[in-house]
Image (tube, rainbow, N blue to C red; front, side, top):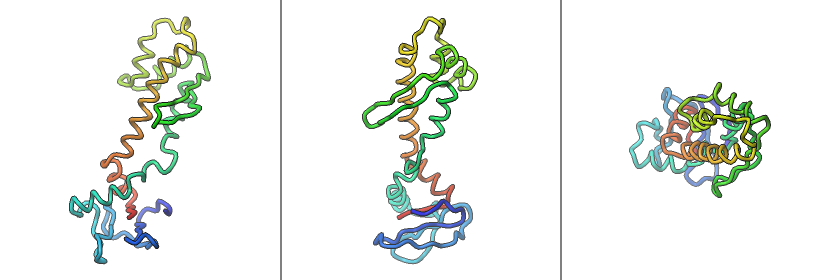
Length: 172
């Protein structure tokens, strides 16, 4: 697929046999081959049908890498390690790597009050009496939900169009 080079558009020909590389010439919007002709157009200038086709052709552009790494790193700072996950099967394995008390303290210090993990931590009145298994049974569905929401957003039309604009990259 190529590298994410700013200022360079990576286009696959419609027969998908070769790649061509062209310098971007339309500012912040990606130049894309508008179809059969060699005319270059910026993504935002394409007709709605063409935009939909480009977006659909790039449906997995945001998840072809370790998209979850930042989330997993955040959970680590909260004392929670993700062992395994399969979002299609609604499965995530969470492992507490600290005490319940320390995890709750980290959540309250580092997570937004609107987040469900924060709400759980705030509602836990006596963390010292809660077992790790009981705590993780409450945390696990929240983490699964957050991972699924992040994945779902990355597959959304808005996220894909944003990526195409941001990296000036279109792959047909």
